[in-house]
Length: 337
Image (cartoon, rainbow, N blue to C red):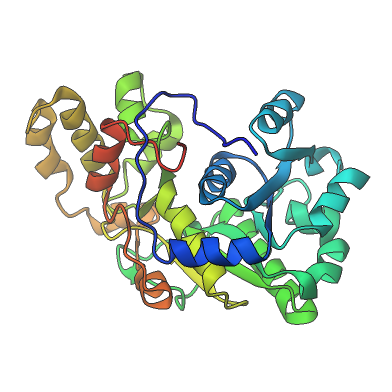
C-alpha cells in the first residue's frame, strides 16, 4: 500500500508515540482494517497516521469522484457516500465496511434530516457488526458544552449547547451511545476543540493576509478557545484503540485555551522571525477581562483534558498552540508525511 502524502514538500520527521511498538507487534499478528466515514481534514489525518504505522488497511467514504480517485491513488479504498442526497454505501462499500476491525466517523450531523447521517443510512448494518468490531470512534465537538462564562468544563459537565449545530451534535452523541447500549457497539465519543494542523492553522491564515471571515470574526470575540493539533487527535485515537473502553467520552484539547487574537499574534511573530510585533502592544488591551454582558454573548469555556492523559498515560506532542504553530512554521507536517 502506498502511503498517503500531504502535497507540500517537507523533511521526514517522526514523532514518538506511546506504545507504538506494541501496536506494530499486534498488527503483525492480526491485520487491522480502519474504515473512516468522512475523509475530511480529520479523516485524512487519521488515514495518513495509520498508514505510517504500517500493517493497517485504510478505507472509507467521500463525496466527489475526483477525491475518491485521489484517495485510491494514495492506497486508500474509497466509496461514495452522500446522505444529503440519500446516497448510502454501495454493495462493494458495505462489503468493505463488514471487513473493518475499527470504524471512525467524522461526519457531522445533517441539519436537513436532524439525524446523524451515518446512522441514518446504516444503523442496522452497524448494529449487526457490533460484536465483531474491536473499536469504534465518533468525532464530536466541545461545542456541546455551550457557554460557561469562562469556567472550566470536563466530560461530566452539563451539555448547554444552545445553537442548532450544538443541539444536533448532542443528539448525534446520544444516538451513537444508544447503539453501544442496545447492541454492544464499541462506541467511543471524542469531543474535539478547534482542530488545527498543517494547511489549516493560524500560520496559514496569517499568510493569506485577507480579511477575517464572519466565523473568524465571531471567534475573535472569545477570550478562550480550546484547540487541538490534529496529530495529537490521531495519537489519542490510537491510544484509545490500544485501551478500548466502549461507552466512554473524551475531550481532546490542549493545555492552553487562548483567544484567537493571541494565537494570530504569535503566528505573525513566527512568520516575521521577530520576538515581538506591532500587534503585541494591542494584545494586552484585547485580553483584558471582558464585561459580563460580552462574556454572556459568546460561548466562553475552558475545556479540561486530564481524562485523556490519565486514561491513556499520554503526553501531548503539542501541549499548546505555541508548540503546534512553531512546528508548522518549521515545516513539520505531521501526521501528513
